[in-house]
Amino acid sequence: MLLNILILALAATTNALTLDTTSQDSICSAATLITNGIMDYYEGIRYGGVVGMFQAPYYWWEAGEVFGGMLDTWYFCQNDTYEKILYDALIAQKGDDNDYIPTNQSSTEGNDDQAFWGFAVLGAAERNFTNPTGDDDSESWISYAQAVYTTMWARWDTENCGGGLRWQIFSLNTGYDYKNTISNASLFHIAARLARYTQNDTYVTVAEEVHDWLRDVNFVTLNGDSYSVYDGANIGTNNCSTISTSEWTYSYGLLLAGSAYLYNYTEDETWLTEVGRYYNGISIFLNSSSDPIIYERQCEVSGTCNNDQRSFKSIFSRCLGLTAKLVPDYHDQIMTIITASAKGAAISCSGGSDGHTCGQNWGYGSWDGWYGLGEQISALEVMQNLLIDEFDAPYTMEKGGSSNIDYSSGQDATTSTNVNEITVIKKDKVGAGIVTAIVSFVLIGLGVWMIF
Image (tube, rainbow, N blue to C red; front, side):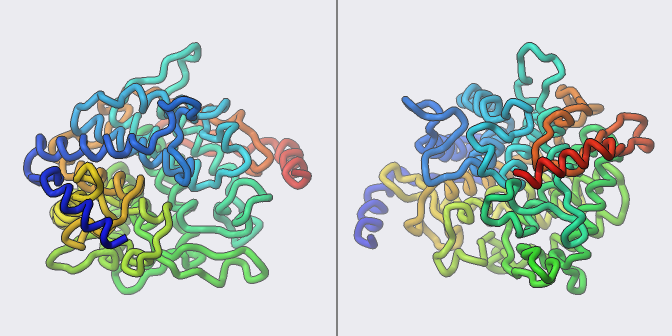
């Protein structure tokens, strides 16, 4: 393998990716090359391929992550090359109930899988991506995100561990008895973004409840002035008290950016404090304070990251950019991290037969021999987030957004897993509330769930 890497590296020296971190043209040129590499893995335009899916071994959730990143490329670089592919993928995978539980994933996806497509359509709403067209004028990107939120919140489980989402949606799947931080951080993150976009405090209330639960079960633990964010725990007989202490960039990122959205919307200093605690916590993922290049500490140094884990720096980088834009107090510190990491990522994108295939280790000094969809999308995200200062903050319905709100979205998408049917009522900003469903209907739903 080493000989092959050396041969490819020598052959690629004239094609290596270059990056000027101060030039939009340079950044977007690099983004174009990386995105072209991403499309090498895409099945949706191949004969017999499924629209919205990447080739094995990449799972459905990662497609949602990738399209969310490519949507930002469309926005930051004003590049419409893949606009139709993006649009078709987001529509094709939304499912019959617009909640991103499509038939082709209806027995296998987890709460975190669904959420990553929710992030993609939230980005579409906040960036004014081409609005959905069809017979139903009520459909919109934000309504799809609301459907994801509604169905996730309906699965909030108070009978075990005092609350929280399970990892899996369906009881027959491995991990159904595990409550993990990423699923709950995802719900928190989606609620925070919906709060800001809709200006509806219902979502703030839910975000607060999710965040409080994560603290209560010690999945998020305060150490001095920084948070440690752990992976999760089995329900088992000890009620989530035996915690897996693995730490991953994407859990920190979603909680950091979710707190940033809530601070930006509410202007409540409590959330600024929370941003600071998560920001202090992410230092564990930086090579050094003087050259703060991001790495996946749990597996990257040991070379044991699986296909999923090799993409986690993607959503982490996106969340860093969002936080820097929404919370000026942390702008300069975060941009230092993004800049150092983008430079390292660009150097790593010097492999393969094309000379700009991206590697995993951004501090390696060259291509490290790793390649794949995760490496490509992670490099893309960290580089294009250099451009956040050139563009407006994510739009809201009151400031620039064209994606229409639909509070009924997702409420008819009852599945055997939904135990908390809810209604979000639009009143004024302060008076928004949650109404529980009729008790008998909930009991029927519970009975169906148990049979399932």
